[in-house]
Length: 444
Ligand code: XLS
Ligand code: CA
Ligand code: CA
Image (cartoon, rainbow, N blue to C red; front, side, top):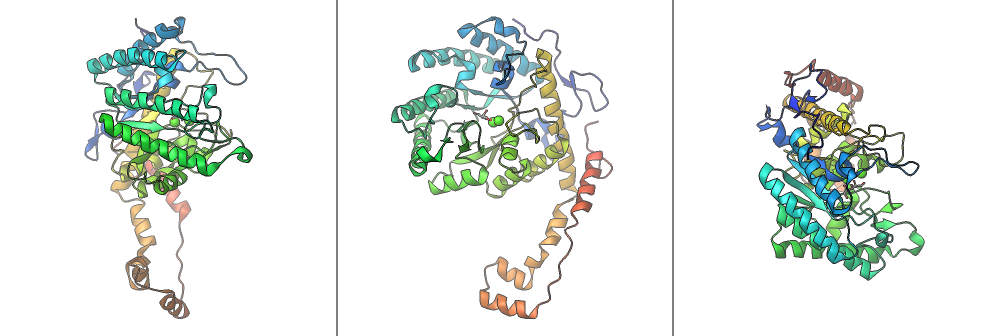
């Protein structure tokens, strides 16, 4: 059955197109810096926001019109597979991501849940073989069910811990079966509501053991995808242990996990943590742990995770700048962990959300690539730190000095500071965004 019969395949038409069902900037086969846009961007559709979300919020009932919602239970799960593959083919994404509960309903027992999963995974596999679609990552949902109220791998209850392990075990088997590029851990309940009842040291030890067992099992079954941790500071818990990239990295290093994990950075989680998106990407890049990206944006006027489709061009330019400097995302990609607004309730809005998201990042890629070609920031940064290339600066950089020598230097030297020229640089970036400087490589 077709669910989007009135929507055409979305194709590239260029920036002047007024066809609402066409890409204005995302031209998948256009080459930029030695790779196609498709290869750089590796777009992925999030199964949950696109095929399962109903538009309800804490104050209001569902609003979304989803023709497949005429079904329920396993029939609904089967119908969603049809809707998903029709959508993937029309939007032209190469990847998708899912939680276990997005693709198949939980049964009354773990056994029954696994049986439901097996059937749907079989359907997904057939469709993937037919279409060439791939899984960017899958994950186990360990935050919705009441059993996880105290946490999953950080629960105070060992039976819950075991249940969580069984869920992840099953997801790793599915990851192997479907050839997932990555496996994600997002710890929505791995944190605390009240420190007064929390043994944080024990919870973190248990969490680390959980990850080690997951790695062991992946090895045992021959799953070779990249493991990712997705940081978020809070929501639904008051405090989540994987607060941001830096705290996740400290945890990974402490527990000997740093070589086996990278980070999945979500833009909205970055801003909830009080960072910019580009800060999180930059931190991960310079530490060699940039794994994948959940491409969305938050609303800075709201204090929660709004998961909007990314439309902020400035932010996309700075994000793509980091991703280009990282030479791409390797096995990662840009997953639209984004949902249409509650008032954008028609099926066609799912296309508008993805079209604007893909165009925003394609434009970000084009502009950031041009800035890098021109060394628009590189030369400024190089000049700013030039002092470390000679004299005492060079000695500091090569660790060949001491407080004695530095004190002597300080007694004799005159300090000459230079301006950071922040406003001038911002103006320059505007010129790139406007296309007034640099060789125009925009896909128009
Ligand atoms: C929630 C998270 C979640 C993860 C996967 O805020 O973004 O959707 O990406 O569990
Ligand atoms: Ca996410
Ligand atoms: Ca989110």
